Length: 391
Image (cartoon, rainbow, N blue to C red):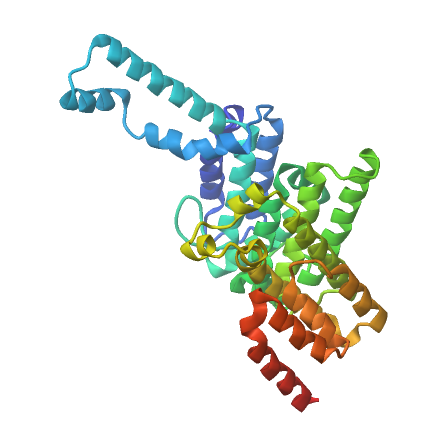
């Protein structure tokens, strides 16, 4: 059965088969998850048929069109309107074309790659495939396997090329979701408790080690990309750099995780540059990114709308990175960030940097001059007062 699944690239059937084999709660085999993930990865790499993301997005529509058989569809249509044999032939041709296209997508390397990422996400959430939940013990072991899998250089290299955004979105769950976070944090005690009973139970990387590893691997990947591109990054390289930048910014919300000052500073600088580029987008491109709400349509101020709908939420997380290291920042470093952010639509970041330099009058002036943050001036004054009272 497994051979048939692998030869025909039946990814769902293979996952179900392997999950069934390893899904004995009395079995303390801790290699279950890594075996499933490696089998899926090998299945994917042997496949030579590639599809685009656009093809993947067509799949739900194709699945819906296959929800009933062609005979049921024709029978239903005949009850509505009389059909000729020619009409029936056209329906059948359309049905068969959609069916063939659906099968081609589901048996492709691209589909299996996204199925692998989806299964990892499912396991991180403590769920079984296709239904049910993992026991607490297995959930922990699965998390440790997933960390080992995602921090393997061979697998990581593939995911950088495949879809860095989705990869980092899944990796982020290990940092921000409560149970996976705690499983990794408390692994030493867990392993000490069970290591004499269970063969092969070993620690995985800590959150801090994962961050350092990802920084090293991303830097190396981008370095090779610049070398190959004559100093310029390809679209794929830009995607990896941006995905990692947002990953660091978002996991920075977790105060229990230590992030080096160097990584915080480099991420802040990259975010500043990213948002400067945002304002340079063509007017029509920017318009497509902003939701067509009544408020957005009413206010014609391009900068205001860009800040409100595209920058504000992300800026809160960037401010969090600055506040992590603000007590250790050298005045020269603060001045460099002030200069870098001068024309960026990160208005509260610019206020905070002025505040760190002691330019409180300049801060108040900025609040009243910049429409997007004017309403927040009194909240900022309260924060400053609290800060000064605490010393």
